[in-house]
Amino acid sequence: MKCVSVRLGDPEVAPLLLDLHREYETRYGTGDSVHDVDGTEFDPPFGGFLVLVDGDTTVAGGGLHRFNATTAEVKRMWTNPSFRRQGHAKTILRELAILARGLGYERMRLETGYAQPEALALYRGLGFTEIGNYGIYEHASGFELDLCPEPAS
Image (cartoon, rainbow, N blue to C red; front, side, top):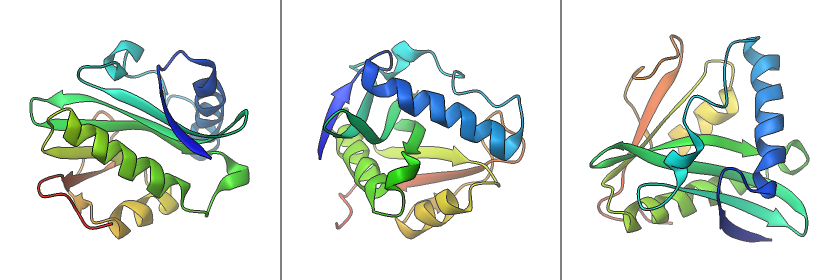
């Protein structure tokens, strides 16, 4: 398996976006969008998108974009259902933290919904601090990770 940098429109990202949309509809009903951030916002020099691939299979992925001058926001976190509970989301988050530091960000933030208990547990377990709802989704939980100094692995 390898972690590669891609653009949001690249073929490796298509299964991620398709399944993420399906999963949001299953968990929340219609209305939640995987397109609430323009794809170009994930491009350097202010963002990036990473996928973990195994051959031709997209295993996991996620991106970050500029939230403000010191904070990157993580979006589109997803793990292929066939590869869940194997630590791949942790790998993507660690790589995104390295990317965010390299882009000069001091913090990384994200939000997740109430119907994603696995994600809530993951972020809490990785040392993200709950910051309350900050985005457009009424019942979402916000989390933030201080990137300075570099956390222990």
